[in-house]
Length: 221
Image (cartoon, rainbow, N blue to C red; front, side, top):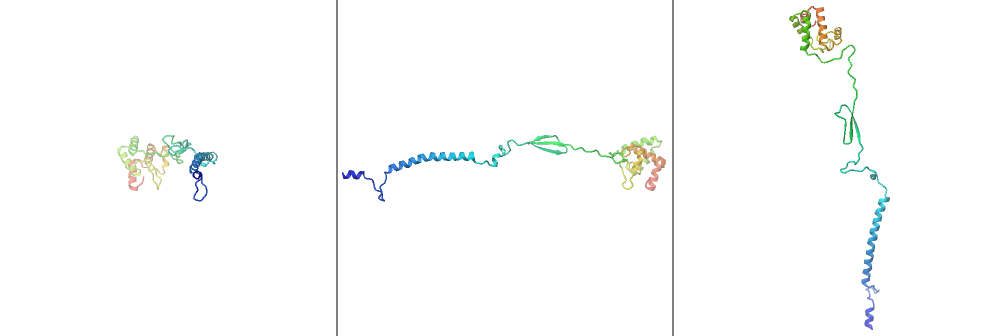
């Protein structure tokens, strides 16, 4: 009887208090861990959903969608106006280029003067003068004197101007507007200037050689 009683009595702990069997305690710890992990996972998932649904939107949430590479997926088209000539209006990289044409008024000639133009070549002017000299009955010697005279005065330039005196044109009329009596295009026309110049020489000196002699002695004619 004493041996059976000793085998059924619990094992005393070092502190003197009775202890549970070790097998049952391990089973309870395993059971708690088995149920606590699913509960923790469910709680974490539920918290994540609540944050997504009820958290306030940040300004970044309203930004335009960004395409791959950092460019806007749907950028708004923009326009650029250019003052001046362009090769061809068109569009590129969502920028539209258009040409803006600004009208420019043509130059206005001074009152009493024709519009200035390019000078007539000296050789062409001399050919015109040769025909007019022949028409007046003067010979080649007179024409030679005329060439020397107007070479000295203007080098046969229709646009030659004297800044100090105001003389102008092939014959260096003073003022140049005197030649308007021979034609309205006196400022640019070699024929008009030569016609006036030969009339002046004929009326004042008689012939080109007389005018050339006076110019050589006095420096003017």
